Image (cartoon, rainbow, N blue to C red; front, side):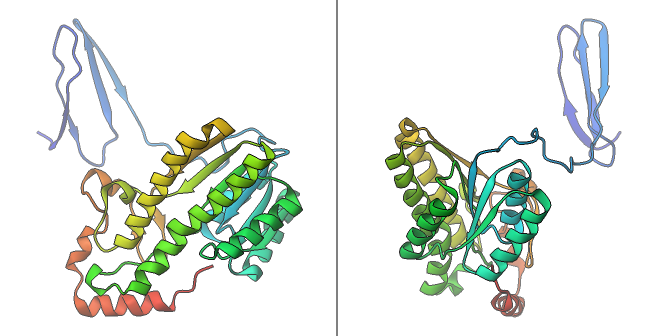
Amino acid sequence: MALGAVVRVSCGVRARLVLPLLPSPPVRLLSHGTKVMYQAHHDFAPVQKVMLPPDTFHGKVAFITGGGTGLGKGMTAALSALGAECVIASRKLDVLKQTAEEISSKTGNKVHAVQCDVRDPESVSNAISKSIEVAGHPSVIINNAAGNFVSPSERLSPNAWRTITDIVLNGTAYITLGIGKELIKARKGAAFLAITTIYAESGSGFVSPSASAKAGVEGLCKSLAAEWGKYGMRFNVIQPGPIKTKVIRMDGGEYVSMAGEFNTLSKVTSEEWNKMEEMIRKTKGS
């Protein structure tokens, strides 16, 4: 008998099915009286195109932090392709300008590059003013800028902790509160989206600054949803699934089998941590 899970869905006569764990596709067996319905479910390839109609965001302005590279660049490209006028913000203006030109040339819609260090309230304030000046008040705001590294917590310095929490939590707060206040004055609504992580809820070893900061971001969004809903503002968070990064693979599927996705790093030796730290320090962000 194959090793697997047992599914029971019955009405009248009990049905019992043993499912092979791999590689067979999931199978569902339902019974109703003496009739048995068999249904097999197969895996489908991921959809490679945006699942929204053309011009969904026509006439809308989208503001994306960390929009020059990675996930932020991908979201900017999708929004621009759907008709949005986008403003991308991060520290490196040269990277932003290159991305803005690349996306705009493909979509035919304007993409503005605005330099901004989300850790600095003055820089954030200037970026918001510049964004409104060139594109108008945003109706979509995506807090995507982030920073992270893996490290045993006993190795963390105050500066290491501050580096992550300043970008992730404080940066998100400065952007959200700054734009929100401008929207309230202009009597305009908007949709805010924050990119968080599955371990914002569970916590995880070896990424305690990120876990703490992301949990704070989710708390901020929940709080403002209750407070600013009356102004026509909506707040959502997304906890992305598997994303391959330069240091480690983030596997969203781990949540069902363990509390913290980085907990297995307890097996990493001190010498291996030294090598990883060296690699991390050489990695330059956007």
